[in-house]
Image (cartoon, rainbow, N blue to C red; front, side, top):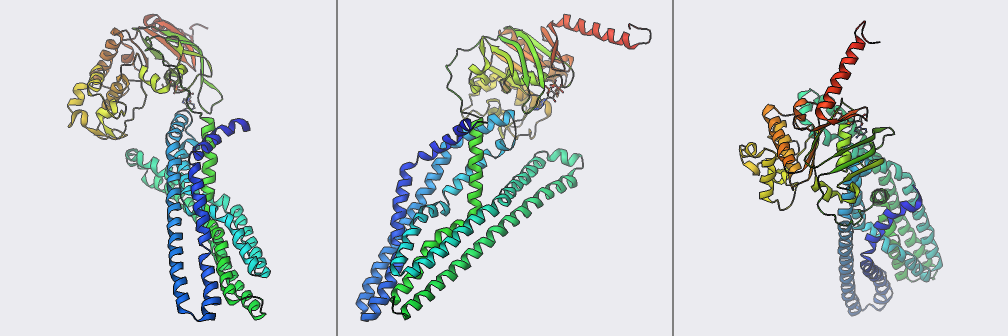
Length: 577
Ligand SMILES: Nc1ncnc2c1ncn2[C@@H]1O[C@H](COP(=O)(O)OP(=O)(O)OP(=O)(O)O)[C@@H](O)[C@H]1O
């Protein structure tokens, strides 16, 4: 990938961050005030030691203390406000990108369910967490460290020098922490995600795990993943913990050393005792943000990785372009020399396929397992883009329709039907927030699923889960068909629509196909079972990703029988040689 393309995703992230630019200024100004107010403690000490103790004036002490209470209250208030503002800036950043990232995740997962598509939303969350954490506020405080150090130089050059040497050492420790903890932290994060994935998968396939007696092996696999995650977390926590403890102890030592140096300078008559105490406090303030950053480093590492991942994801899955809306198409498909390569594969699953579908036609796509029927279904529904050739719906290539628009024109019943958690009506209405009850019932009627749904305990309001819940395989398939027919599509692509159906169910699907054809629409049926092609007018036969026949159903079937007989004859001793 060229660096130019890489930047588009990063630019999108930066643009989302820039949306809150004015708030950063606000936080920056508040941070300046907070840091100035942090001088309250040292100043108070200076005044108490040098003025109050010298003059023995209780009134001065009371006046100073009242002032200090006020200044600390102001500091607390400003610190609280800047924390709240950053929390909202982070939420705003996430809200600005949530939909875009989810869309990118979804589009990538449809063609390439890899790590990037699985972690996208978590990556966004990790950046949001860093933005709302105290570490980011520490980043606003760190520029003030030199100011505090300068203050120390004013007290005495030696004190300033000690603080610079100590602070420099702490910065070196921070860098070492970053270098040493980076890989273990990333590995531990990956292991945690892998363990989560394993447990999700086992949970979603609970029935099969139980039925095939896979429980103990599944547990072993999960415990393995979990063990790796835990040991990774321990290693990473050990490293960060070591650095945190060391930094804390070192900072405390440095503070005492500063006090000791101050005392020595007092004894030499070069410093007042107030400056001695104030200097020690000032140095503590100067180094506090560095210490905080070291303690929270895993958060920083995770967020940086998240930022890089998001930049890559958004670059590789660019935002959908606005398309000119096209009128509702006629049920005409034209497939010309289409070559389709499955994501991540080298070899084409479909090669130079051409055929056409006219309004009112049903086409059966037949062929042995692995011949490319489902691949064709994915290409026709726009899930996989052809690597070569064109697929046109009523003259326009599929990518001229937006994905949601195309989904409404071409109804799709996948080979393996999965539903979403919700009611049957919501599922048929494709999760529409305001399902059109009339359209839901109409789709169910067209799919001949209406009576079957009414027989369920709560009819259309029966709740189902992603794996169906109370529904049988055949019932899920018929609800899947109703879902494909929702919204008045012009073309239906049905991948093995009757694989789970009994005779009655198959007949119901055939009735649905008949009705669809009669309305001038067209249907493509990827089929294994003869019952599925009953309503087909033409057949497309695939073998090893290539078209071996296309034409009227009877002709193709006759040709199949002829080929079969020839093969049998050739295989029989004394047959055709
Ligand atoms: N997601 C995928 N990633 C990589 N290769 C794939 C993917 N899906 C299918 N293939 C490959 O594409 C080829 C065609 O598979 P396809 O699922 O289209 O066959 P099919 O005719 O629908 O088979 P079946 O009748 O068993 O459903 C096969 O070689 C398969 O390995």
